Amino acid sequence: MVPTTHYLLLSAAIFVIGVMGVLIRRNALVIFMAIELMLNAVNLSFVAFARELQSMHGQLFVLFVLTVAAAEATVGLAIIIAIFRNKESVDIDDINLMKG
Image 1 (cartoon, helix red, strand yellow):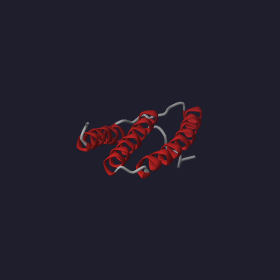
Image 2 (cartoon, one colour):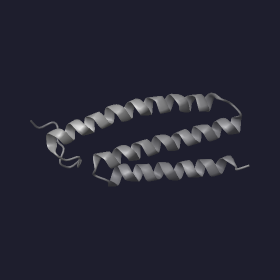
Image 3 (tube, helix red, strand yellow):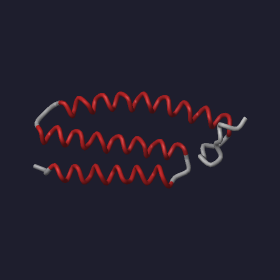
Image 4 (cartoon, helix red, strand yellow):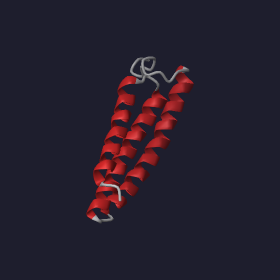
């Protein structure tokens, strides 16, 4: 049986990789994938805590987070595609929607 601390360390490492992806990268798709990676890291910690406490509440919460993440992915990708069609780039530095 794997201890809960191993799951939490893995979750923290995945979350840090996601944060670094958001802070370092300039491509909107890569930033979007890094945000999804952070959501999955949090889901892993929820499942680890649910297993530790022998409760289904954490797993139920993960189900809700996955549902919201799927909706967020759909809307986010639609926005990224619309920006690409208008600006011909998904580089964050090239996108300035406040200017006309």
